[in-house]
Length: 533
Image (cartoon, rainbow, N blue to C red; front, side, top):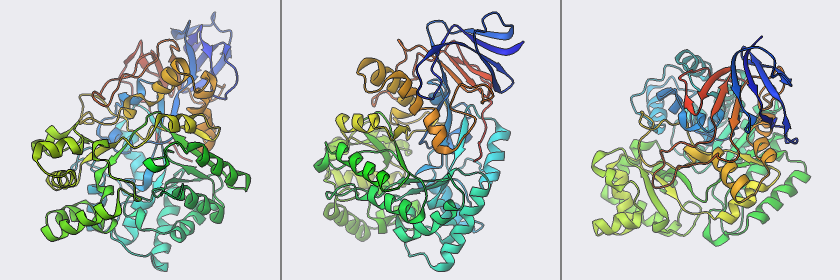
């Protein structure tokens, strides 16, 4: 007698091995048996005839840290078969929280993505885990710990070189998070205060990872330049010097002057691997990225946190200096400004909501000002919270990264729920469709990957990289995270114009043995966990 029996399906087990016909049985939160089980008894039976039974997907790169706190449902991920989000990416995590009230305030205002007044109720990763599990969440999360949060807690959010005492304090905070189960350290080296740390600082912190084999250094790298993938080279140097595995976030060629060079980038990565660096990467299946516009301002202008930046923007002389530096330095690492490729996707100030969906070129035209002035006006009015979409990538480069053997899939999105507290603005469609888009577009419609390979890159390969030994595969004794997929119908519907649309073609999803999606509709069961390394 089983609790759940999934019959008649074709199993793609998450290892990359060929698909095979089998039934899958679940008892409690574990896979109990795999094989010819159609005559077995079960409290609940799911007919998967004509469908693929896969491990629940593990999204390697997300920002669901607080979205699941704000709305536990996380339907944008759940409804496309994602059962685990790796959180804590790009250097900014909601832990550790400094005892100093000012540093705590700046950390919280930096993580404004949902609501400034949302209660946290923790100081470290252990408290974060306890809070989310007591609340209940629909999917699992696997936490990293962020360099920006660690640096902010140890020495504040301003510019400055870390002293020996600062490094010692950061190492203590990092070690505490690793002891509490963080899967690794993330940096966001275009995002303050992580961006204020130099290579030596990150190497020194990674020593704590080296003492714990398998813990990852996950890097949102510094912006690449016209000279090539300089940000990737720094990350590889850090891995080589510290002796730690390196995972590179959201691979892309963003500089228009270097579009079409993805193969060269991956050849260089392969060369580093042959020289002994343990390196992997993730990519999401879109030719556009998204982030806060604040990172497009000069580094000095972002020192001290979001509200300090806003104060500078509201001072005429300081704003003039910001404007001059932006025009002189270019976008991020000196990329050319293409204001018609920068689209506003989220504004908090209701008086400026009309800007959502407009490029800065469009917004400037409506206001009769230069695009850079439209952007800075909006930033000041929205208190630095503006989020944008960068159309600074190509489909060709994305496909090259997606098919490379070292890559896996990470959405760079968040678990959202349309119509709820996380369902505002016009966010990047990756939040609602990355996994389904891989299966629908890049397996079925315009093949880049085979089905088994694609599922491997979204399940077992990610679990192996994280060191999660009981998820990511359909195997007896493993956690019962499952996705039943219609390979002929799975498709993403979210677009840049209308992003709050759920993927379809994943009629059944199981999280820790509980049916979380039945016949395409969420059941309201929240059986997710905060995992520990």
